[in-house]
Amino acid sequence: MRARAEAWKAIGSQPQKVRVLGVPFDCRFAKVMVDADYYMKRIANGTVKLDIDGLKSISDLDLDAQRQALISGNTSMLAGGSMSRFWFSPAETTYEVRDGATILRSCQVELLTEAEYLYEHGAITRAGKADPYGAQFARSFSKMYDEIAAQRPIYRELKALFSFVAIARLMKDDHVERTAGASLRYFLRSYKVPCVPISRAVKGLAHVKLTTETIETPSGPRQYHLI
Image 1: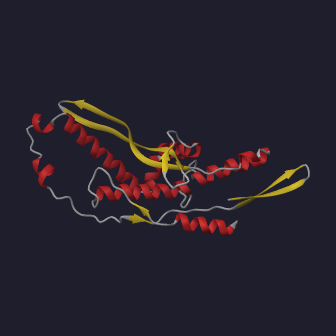
Image 2 (image 1 turned 60 degrees about the horizontal axis):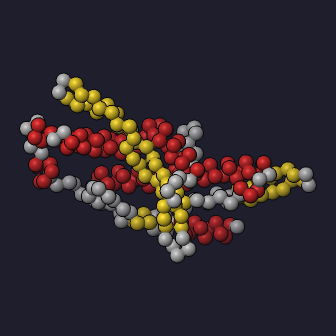
Image 3 (image 1 turned 180 degrees about the vertical axis):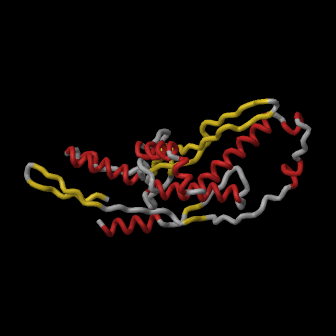
């Protein structure tokens, strides 16, 4: 059992390719997105734990369900295992128009998820629905986003970037350059975005938790080892 756990750690720790979409690869905006995403996945798999009540990793949620299955005697529920992808997305965004000015009142960030399947030949495809534990983790993360950001400032910066995007989109939709008579040509055409190097690959995140549960049965105590 321990040998298999170590083998899984070795597989899961292999380098993972970094993708950046929508902004230049080597810039501060991209680095914030990559760092926020990478740390979120450490929280998701239980590699790190924040001091926030109710925020449980997927591995802890799965383990809790396994324990309940043992206690209830429903050992057919012990299979477990899933694959999910996660991404941050803008949630509720509110504006106020007053005295010719548009004010951004709120720009919330939420974590979304979708289950995936792995075929025998190695291809990964989307399931079109969320894994129950993945969905529970995503809801908790979204609900506690500000608490998480208080402990990990990278999420405050990510939320600020979402706000900048919301403002830029509003400026574009309202044709600010034309209606306000302001020239944005320098920022749109000539400004050089400072280079912030980002690694093209990061170490994979592997976390294996082993626990032993002793369940009383009519024939005496029975010991289960859960991975």
